Length: 340
Image (cartoon, rainbow, N blue to C red; front, side, top):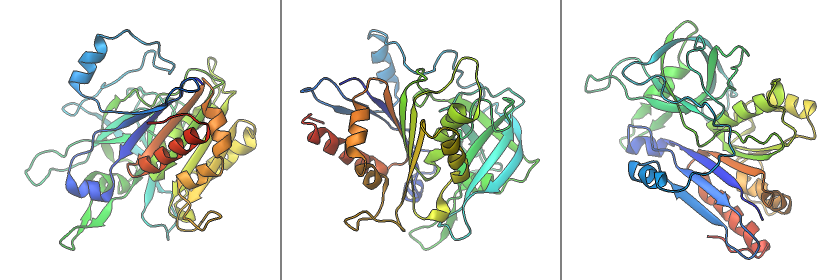
């Protein structure tokens, strides 16, 4: 049984935002399956200096991801790149529980990024202490070529954060509301890009399983555009891309038209399964979350996880972690493989 890697970025939920005004540190998960009879370990790591220093003393591993020439932190908070908003459109239905917007910013080719990276946004104005707002990180929702195909833009998928605090007051997230309210032509301050954990695999024949909730779809949209909508001299995807997307209602489904086109274009190479928790149930009458949908394919998924060129990526609300972990435990148990 060969290695399978996965990375998950935890996005802040309303309750998390109430607890802290700053963006949470990303959390990354690795699922590694080993030879039969050995264990499968779920690793959790955070990025800190001591961990990096310890890693430097270990033998270097050959990366299986497209990390050659990856650029990070071209622009920093004290000297951000100032782009223009070219497009900002709501992509959820009027009856959806919350608004999600797709936006495109000009970069003039100066913010070079890769699929799976993130950028920081600094909202206009100052905080209650009169200081500039802190940056908020957002996963990039466009391929490196951008939505216009000229490497001159970057796109985001942002949900407008509005919640009621303990005092009964309606609170609006500063950066998400700033972004969702942007009009074409408006300036936007951009930092980064950052991140190497979510980069695409090098192997064009890989099986890539993508698990997303809500706006966690962003990095996978960037993957899928490169895999199915673009032509590259050095990359042609011939493997399997399998997306599981979880949302509360069908009016919350994101980029469904694009995924339908991908299925028509490459039916043997792309699969998508939706989990609509407030509208769908399984045979036992349980709400349809991502892990519930995955359970319907558990034998097939486990066979894919045994392959040495299968990669599992997870991005979304932190609460999805346990459900996915439960599925991994169940799959391992069915195969008689210890998991911890």
